[in-house]
Length: 193
Image (tube, rainbow, N blue to C red; front, side):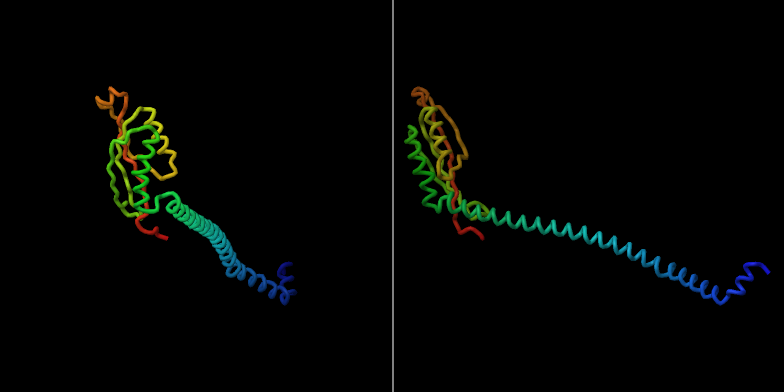
């Protein structure tokens, strides 16, 4: 009888349960622990993906809050612009584009030759545009002074078109004719909230 056979025969009562326990451990390792390990690895990967998704969602939320705050600031500034900078209505816009221009031309030493006034609603807006097509006559220096006054005015005025002309009569006098279209905008209805 071999040595291993003799050990097995004498210790069978201890070895059989030991082999059975080892086999059970091996089966548990193969059929329970290994699948759970894969499941845990998969869960960890899912948790990492969820964490990345959470960070992205928080960033998107912050961008949305920033955009909303920016939109609110822009709306407030637009309301302030409407109430403090733009003429409050048609009569004030008329004064700005007609009477104020006449006074500014006279103050700059220009001759007020003539003007025509028009107004029109701005498409898809609460604003209307009031414009005056003005013709003035004077020296180049006085025209520059007038344009500087228009540019520095507290009123909201936009010089949309400017044409310098010199007719034969004004050439002899050393003057220029200037034609300009000056516009302003005013509210025709209350601004949308």
